[in-house]
Length: 201
Image 1: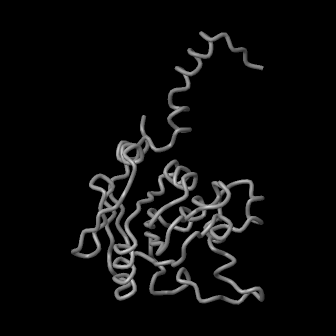
Image 2: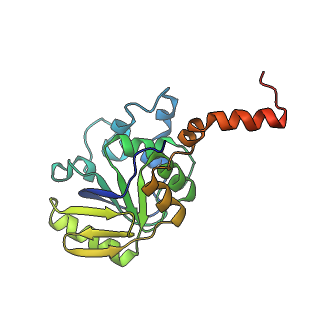
Image 3: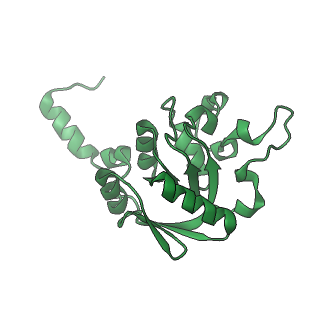
């Protein structure tokens, strides 16, 4: 039985600017000691959002105009680079985001996000600037990420986005979690394992 299909993501956006935003900036390393991913949303971009004295920094995620955003728009390339920590997309997802738009993504970050059901799509820098400008001008603007048609509707404007065919199929058919798919077919796994002669310890 497949998981929920993901075809459309609708919501307001928030813009975070910068190239090469790595996973350590997304979720600082000290939060990797957690036993579960619960609560990681509160630590999203923690060191960029707070000063050393604990006071708030001027970060878009804490701007009340964008408090209900569910689409993260990265005005930059190579988002999620650095270490392959799964905690990075987990923190984004648990902070309430369901889609990320960027010029490009690090491969492992993209894979970890897709396996979580966090939609990541790419577009050109020119289109990214257009989306960012529209959100900044109107924080209440609704975005519609259309996975099936590979486009983002920004108000009345449509912007083409990139998404690998394998990810598009996985998301729209509900087979985006390989572990869940494996567990769903555990009987077939046991049959094949028995045929190969493996012994369970």
